[in-house]
Amino acid sequence: MISLTVSAVLPSLRPPPCPSQVNCKEASNSQLWLLYMSLILTSIGSGGIKPCVVTFAADQFDMRRSAVASRSWNFFNWYYFCMGMATLTALTVVVYIQDNVGWGWGLGIPAIGMALSIIAFIFGSSLYNKLKPEGSPLVRLAQVVVAAAKKRKEVMPPDPGMLYQNKELDAAISVNGRLLHSDQFRWFDRAAIVTDEDAEDSKSPNLWRIATVHRIEELKCIVRMLPIWSAGILLVTASSHLHSFVIQQARSMDRHLSPSFEIPPASLSIFSILTTLAGLVLYERLFVPFARRFTGNPSGITCLQRMGVGLFISVIATIVSALVEVKRKQVAALHNLLDSPRAIIPISVFWLLPQYILHGIAEVFMAVGHMEFLYDQSPETMRSTAAALNSLEVSMGNYIGTLVVSLVHKYTGRKNNWLPDRNLNRGKIGLLLLAYNGDPSYKSRVLCNLCLVLHLQTLRGGQRRRCSSRR
Image (cartoon, rainbow, N blue to C red; front, side, top):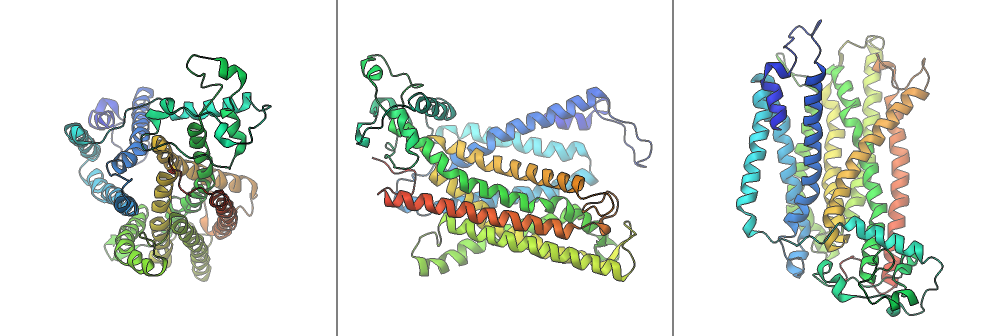
């Protein structure tokens, strides 16, 4: 953030201003290098902070107490609410400062805010509950896979109690107790088979050859989460058009709130954020007490049910998006504007609000439920890894959305291209949105059914659903 601010303030580190937007001087290689390095450093820093901050904050509460654990959904609601408020501030206050005061202050204020947050974090470090680091969890997962592969020809013992256990070895990574053995994914259990070579080795065990049941169950927990995690990718892919197509649609629509004020197309995303913020409050104050009367669940509904509602609303939002595009093109045809891409179609931009509102409601259910699910189902020493999956799904969903757009643009022909370069009115965005809706909704049902089968199998095996089952 500091390097971005400096590049915006010092004239030698940026191209000269070009108000006319004609024959502007391009940035030099050194100026571009500084910009790209600043963005890369920002991405690396964000990748280190985001997965850890939510799990670190949740770890400050004693989830072993039933009263606290039953209200874990409350913490994730308010965490997401704070994130939404920060995003809303960035899209309103910070953008206003950048446009009306200058990029120096527009980038400097977030840099100052980040510096103050670091200072506050350091001064409060003595008050935090901190876990001692015990190596990379990814290495432990790799060790289990390698050990299981090496023993793929070994015969499984009839009694799971004969699999390798080592309380001392697992003590540092099982503060709240070791994970119970489960009957799922039995292939990984081969990593815990004790061979004659392992029994004769009096030294510390070679973790690339033998793994404890606890470490194997950690890997199983991660594998169980992958189908639901994949469903989150589909939701992000389906909603990625809000940042591309909808902005282009808004540019061709009447955006006047008054004769002298127009809504900037990119500012429409504020309505989705406002809906999410209001929805989080209403979810806690109204929906949870109402649902609790019927389900008896302290959180109203389970994480999986919450995500299912979010996926369903996302499907409805995508259908609405397609119908609004049909309406926009009908009005354009009625006024003979289909071949006038720069013309303003006499249809209010507020026709786009329902899809933004629906996507905001879907975030309330899917995003928060998904975050709580990943935290709840992950082993205690891998919760930051599980939170990183949440950020990874957002990235992958947007990349997949971009890939879909590129493929559609490339293979739908030149004459009847669904996404023409210059005239959106002659495109077929509605069909693309329906394609988004058809494929992800089907895949989501398949993934959710798969997860349901996995959890039912776990229950039949006598184990609890959560990966935090201990002994």
